[in-house]
Length: 228
Ligand SMILES: NC(=O)c1ccc[n+]([C@@H]2O[C@H](COP(=O)([O-])OP(=O)(O)OC[C@H]3O[C@@H](n4cnc5c(N)ncnc54)[C@H](OP(=O)(O)O)[C@@H]3O)[C@@H](O)[C@H]2O)c1
Image 1 (cartoon, rainbow, N blue to C red):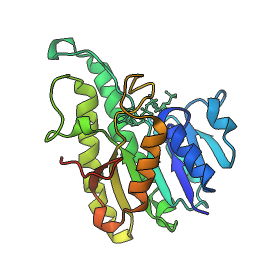
Image 2: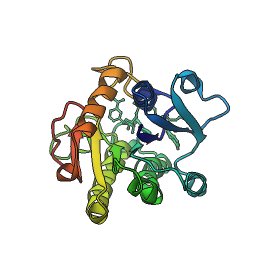
Image 3: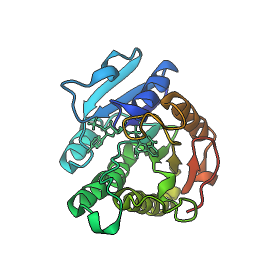
């Protein structure tokens, strides 16, 4: 069975993706920051292997890649993310938080995609998916809530992965950007439109149907392509 590698797998959408892939018999490499109390990920049945990974700690990324050097990865999902500063308006910005949002949402996914590229190239699925947000779309999202840190870090993520997709195309690796929907998680809140189960099932459907023709493009969990 194929192997999926997921960051931020201890709660929210990452946890549900892990649960669904494990249920279907995949080997799941579930990474999370706190392996001492990983929470529900430890109770999922199936072939789940939990590893510690703070995505912003690039030495940890390198160490984990070395530890998994002999493990082909069919699908790598950069899921971990932070919303960051929820202050509205230009005059209330927490710039340190904005920098941290860039580390988590922009720099880390590219670092992980780059470092684990050999593992993905060695797999059969050869796919790297990254969870972005429709709030990063200049064409589509309404600027009614500022969220500077989140929107800009995800918009920059989109460009980084768009460029990366072309760079790795010759290796036959497909790179997909995803909007998971507005999802009832700690980040999305209790009033969000869909549950994590629906989001993860949709994401899996989109990835299942994606290939090189879709590489470097941005899709919602329901299959709709999102304009930049
Ligand atoms: N929920 C939505 O409506 C929505 C909409 C659009 C896009 N998204 C995106 O979907 C993805 C998952 O979001 P979610 O709703 O599931 O959020 P969530 O419930 O807040 O979970 C976020 C996950 O990211 C992990 N994470 C944060 N910083 C990390 C770091 N430095 N190293 C490792 N893991 C880290 C968290 O781990 P800890 O438990 O250790 O903090 C947690 O597992 C994110 O990329 C988010 O931007 C969500």
